[in-house]
Image 1 (tube, one colour):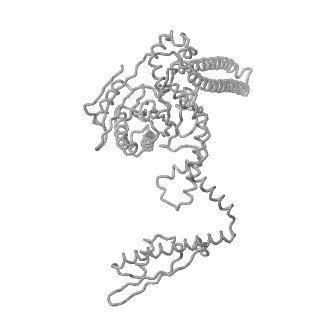
Image 2 (spheres, helix red, strand yellow):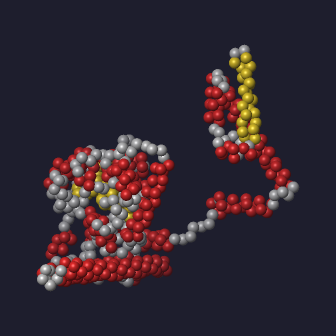
Image 3 (tube, rainbow, N blue to C red):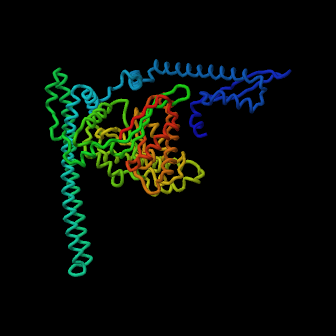
Length: 552
């Protein structure tokens, strides 16, 4: 009502007259209308029919007459306003220069050809240059330079670990001596003092190495980007790239096999894998690739310091598809805190620091951005809930209390994304939040972890991620309660749910062929692995186009 009162001064009231005949009686309908009419004509017509009890056979005639009246009077009002505007212009009431400037500004702001060109971005320019070089004969040169940087960081990390280990051994010896003298010449307070000194010394040493690693990676990133730009310029000036490829070479010692037999066995240990080709879809069937792999989740992220042909090919493949429409993603199961201080998150952060990321921000900076987004999203959600009326909260009281207790934490089923160019086989990490409920044997298809997988697959469809690795059992390590029936039941649930989600993909992306890798922990037995591999084709109904490859 307040809006209508505010516009009352700029509106004009006109009377709509409609004559019609009912039996032997001539009737006249007169309705005052305010122009310009803000209401929907169909709604206005329906109210007139209802309020004045007009016969149904007059309905179409009334609507036509009402529409014509409103259209005619609206055009007359516009013509009248235009005549008044022209009259003010001719009498000098309006400044012509001011009016033309306003028109010019409006035209320039709303016309694309007059829009300001976007300022070139360093990240975009570097991405274009890198994409061009990695698909040229200079790709081997780039990989050699990246490997040299990786080796230098690895040596620095080894030196750090050795120094921290020596400090811990020395502190353990000192603590043993102190505990031996406890009760004789030393008291509990003396023990606490020594422990506090040890903790402070270890913190100082770790901070020193953290700052040094951060400084070295920053220098490497700057040098690498400048060198890539210079290499691109040199290649444009000279067609002979053979001399440029000789600039960076990997030292023979770096590519040699490790001398330690145990390390060699670790490097050469093959994966246990089964691969399938399936067709999904109701009318238009799409081919997808499925793999069942037994490996550690971080094996898809780690680089090998001692290079081999397979490792180099994987690194090349990851680099070639970095700026493409065929990205690779990995689902990492994490807790509800956005940090890298514990569990699998700490192990992943350690792997991510082993090699400098030359294209994206480091993991810590990305997590800080995610933390700010989570806080903003929580604030927006809480404000909307306050504006809405009270609704049933039968199942959401516990979640709401957890969010109110710590708004920076995630809820089960939510996930955040980090981008990487320094990992072995993946570009995108989906950090999926799960709770202890995934270790129980009674989860259903509506569990937050399962719905989180659905949302992750939807993001893959909208962001050109054609290969995604999913933990089949929704855990990264096995425990005592995870028996063979537990594993079979969990695998069947995830297989069926992922199959349904993949059939939905046709409506999400139009039916693009994708690769889904189901990952099981390394500790699972071969017998259990082959039971799961027999279950997969039964659920997905693999046709004669089945392709099986096993690596033992």
